[in-house]
Image (tube, rainbow, N blue to C red; front, side, top):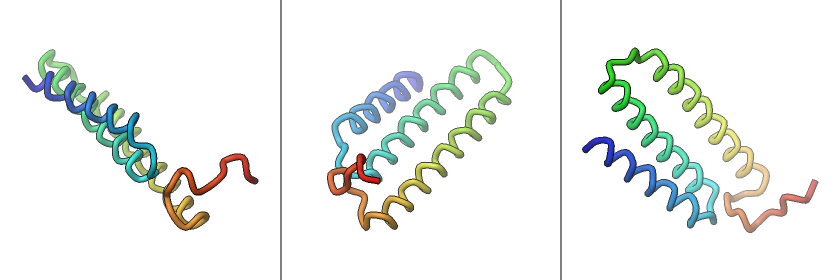
Length: 94
């Protein structure tokens, strides 16, 4: 049951990520939602198969670093352009 819940969460996160690309913040939140569903999926898999949770802590460390990197990009984007709309800035501009 929890396995299906985490797969449903993953699919919902992918749908939001693929169909809502106006704001950078919503894109980052959907990525974090996908990471949360993957964390639940890996936790359930390790709990059912009686694996050690050291790998889970290693993955969680990388996911937290990914979240910090996304937030720092969001802050630098807002300081540079004033908002987080994707259509308001040109990526080819230096």
